[in-house]
Image (cartoon, rainbow, N blue to C red; front, side):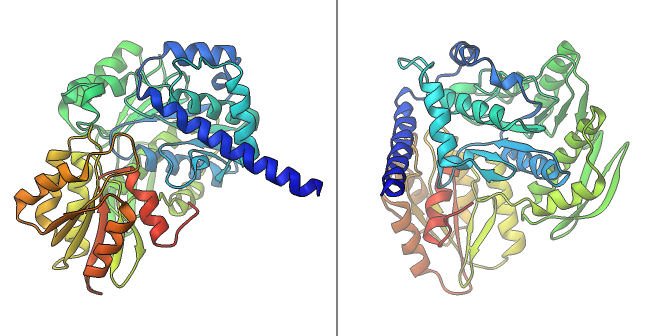
Length: 433
C-alpha cells in the first residue's frame, strides 16, 4: 500500500510540476539577462561548475549540438545536452549521458528553483534554463552542450563561459525580437562570444560573416569558418568527407538525411577539434561513431512508408529551401501532400512562397504554440497559389486527412515549425525520442 501511495504521489508531483512550468508561458518572451543572472546568482551559479559548448544560429543548431554531444558520449565523457523545444515530453530538453532526466530529478530541480525565482516576472525559458543548469550541475558532466533558445546576446543561456562557441548559419527569423536585417540578427547571435574563446561558424552570408569577425576581433576570439578553415563535402547519399588544416576524415557515415546535415556535422567536428586543444580526449573513431549514432527527430525524418511520411521542422527561409531541394532530389515526380503549420512571428509569407508551388495539396494547421499562426490566415495565402488547400484546427486531424488522400507512391510532408513535430510523430506511433 505504501508503494502504491508513493507512486500516486510521485505522479501527482510530476503533473503539478509540468502544469507549473507551462503556466510560466503567460509571461511570453522577454529577452534580457538581468532576471536570469539574479536567479542563477541566488542558486550559486550552477552554470559555472561545468565545462560547456554553446551553440547559436538560425538553422541547424539543434542538430549540431546533438552531434557534439554524441561524439563526446562515444569518447567516454559524461555529457549533458540542453535543447529546445521538446516534441512530446518536457524532459527531452535535458539529457544526461544521452537519456532524458528522470521525473524525480525534474520535480526536485523545479522545487529548488521555485524557492528562489521571482514569480512576478520569470519567463518559461528563464526558469527552465535555471533548472536545466541545476540538473546538469548535480550530474557533474565532463562536458555540457547548450543550445541557445532565441537569438544569443540576451538569451538566458548566455550566462555560460564555454570552451568553444558555435554559430551555425544565420537567416531572417524572430524579426520582432532580433531585428529585420541579417546584420542585426547576426549581431544578436554573435553576442554569445566570450573573450579569448574559440568560435566555429557556418554563417554563409557576407553581412553575417562580417559582424561575426568584427565581434570576434573585439573579443580577441579566434574564428574558424566553414569553407575557409575547414569543410565537409557530401560523397554519397549518407556519407561525407571532412578536412581542415589538422584533420582529414573520409567516408563518414550519417544517419540523418538532408544536405544541411553534412554542414552541421562539419561544424561539430571543427568544435571537437577545439575541445581536443583544451584537454578533451576525443579520437577519430569517436567522431565517426558519434556522427553515425546521431538522430535528431524532425529533421527530414522518415516516419512511415506507403505513402512515405516525412517530418521536417523547417521554419526559416534557408531551412525551407533546403527542404524543397531535398524533396526534389530524393522524390522526383512524386506528389507532395503538405501539412503546413507556422508561427506568426516567423517570415511565414516567404516560407509559403518557397514550398507551396511544389505541393499537390496542402492542409493548414496550427502548431502547438501560443505563437501559432491562425490556420485560416495561412489558408488565405496558400489559396493564392492555385493549390488545393484546406485547414483544420487540429494537427492530427489534418494529418490523417492528407494520409487518406495520398496514394502509396505519394509523400506526405509535415513542415513549417518545430512545434509540428511531436503530434505528427505521435500520430505515426512514435512516443519516445
